[in-house]
Length: 124
Image (cartoon, rainbow, N blue to C red; front, top):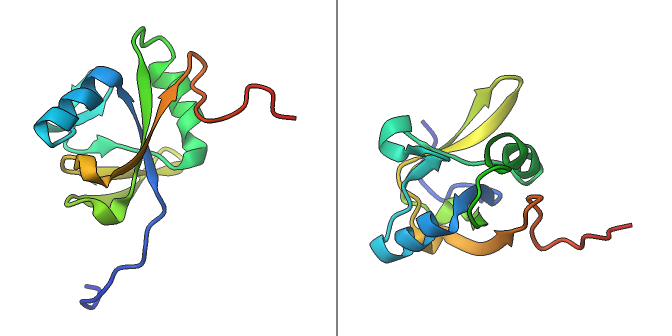
């Protein structure tokens, strides 16, 4: 067990959410959607990703969502829930073992139909 004291600061983690789910979380004070179509209660944790994993997650699970999406940028140090980085296939992903506190969400970016956020369409 690590000694008591400050934990090392973690890098932000990312979660793709529907606008409706994010708005509901702001009203209720807790975000509890694990992934598209599954709740925290059903899955046991909330799926998250590192920045380089956002595009592949969008392609695999959200491209055909048919409703507005946002990218939540979460500061793990502000969460009351534990974050575990766990193996999934040949990679690892952060999983949040409890609700995401809206106060831990430090940025919210609308995603366009191609899963892009805050990026120029014409990057050369």
